[in-house]
Length: 423
Ligand code: FES
Ligand SMILES: [Fe+2]
Image (cartoon, rainbow, N blue to C red; front, side, top):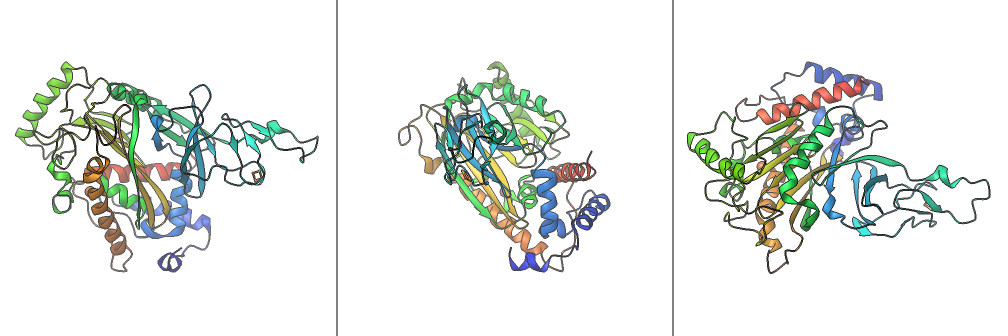
């Protein structure tokens, strides 16, 4: 906890903090940024963790990161370590990474491969389904191994995207419809035959909502993202009020090509803008989001033959946005660390047969988004610093440039209020 967090402990009880959160969200003007405590107070952060990150579906990674039996990766959802592992039948399971003996973390690496899951503390051993196989002889005859399997997290996969939920009961809603859309829209990419080419983990001293707010608008792009704007069109989709006739003509031309190849591209929304897919052209002439718009990898993905696929943008609130292109795709994941700290993970995927140094250069692949992420990190950190000021008061969002932020805030506010009410 940093100095500022300590100064901000202002709610005498958890109940008071929860009712204050509900009041602030209820009274917030819809088109304004949030009151200061929602961006910097540790009590409010704890409620975000309990009501959003421990209840809702979260994007954690791609199925092709763990192609074979026993491959795993780990994530930390706040203080909750979770491991995601490929099982014997090819299924993907998520477990709380906490031993049923005395609670030690079982997998301490970021990723790896195991035959069984062995706790490093006293070597209790679990199979890939989480069943306890071995606990030594020291536990006595009455010890019931069946009662001490690993605790599961809910886990679902759509179009290669792995989502988990730490809720006791699986979250209700139309999430399965989003997963079906992901299957349909990701089919051309043949995700199981892709591989992780390179990954970055960026620490940002900003509340997770500031990271997402920043991502949900491109109002800041002109002044901050020269590399990205070599290829990215700022329009959010064809309905964007700022879209020009030249853009609409380009869209008509490119979408006709996609139609001819049976490539899904039309905007699809699920859950009131919570989950959204849309394929958008890049700047005219650009193939992918590299520094010069030319290929990042010589092998196209899956059944794709047209290098000009634009970027299929996939949004999943609360923690992911993604860019799917012709020769590589990029996934982004945000995980909160504390009230004023987040981790942004970016992963670049290519065809699994693409050879590093021959078909692709990881440095070229990551160049634009490394620069963009760092620019966004500075914007997020400066935003946080200014919000921490006694001079901060919520300010207005632009309906034409920041409607994505308004959508995010509506979803956030509605979800927290629903979950606080236990509905
Ligand atoms: S805590 Fe895992 S074996 Fe003891
Ligand atoms: Fe940005």
